[in-house]
Length: 160
Image 1: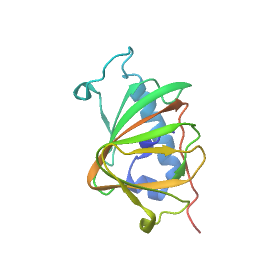
Image 2: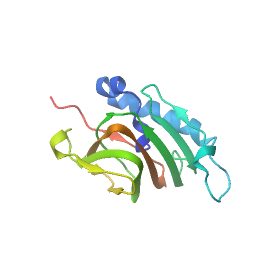
Image 3: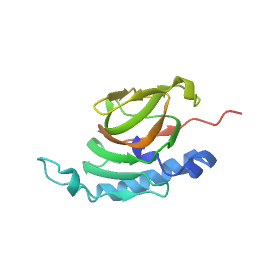
Image 4: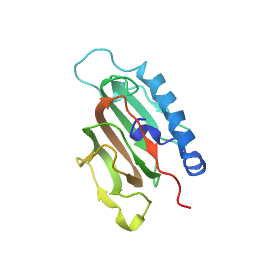
């Protein structure tokens, strides 16, 4: 599942994170069909955005996150969006903060006290299989993720 793509809706993620992840994978597949086919500069104003039910907007502008090979996408997160603990199967997955603030931390349970602020220009390398969680700042956040597909996202089981 794509990193930022899995941000379906707060309600869906809190009630059934696994279903939210599957729904995002389908959304990313549809987005990939509109990704730029050729190389060259990418004009942010020319991106095709898909808005998800929770207000997250995603644009895939290179490759297809559901297939083997490199891909790149942008995501606009609404203010204060919480992203529950999850892992990714990709190696070399990097997320760059383009605008706003992303609070991010390693861990298997969401703990706001562990979150560290990352502003524009910050790059986060998300190791394969290592649990982490995040939250958008009060102004929201715009992110760019680059990796090699197929992308994935596995939400951790809720604490019992």
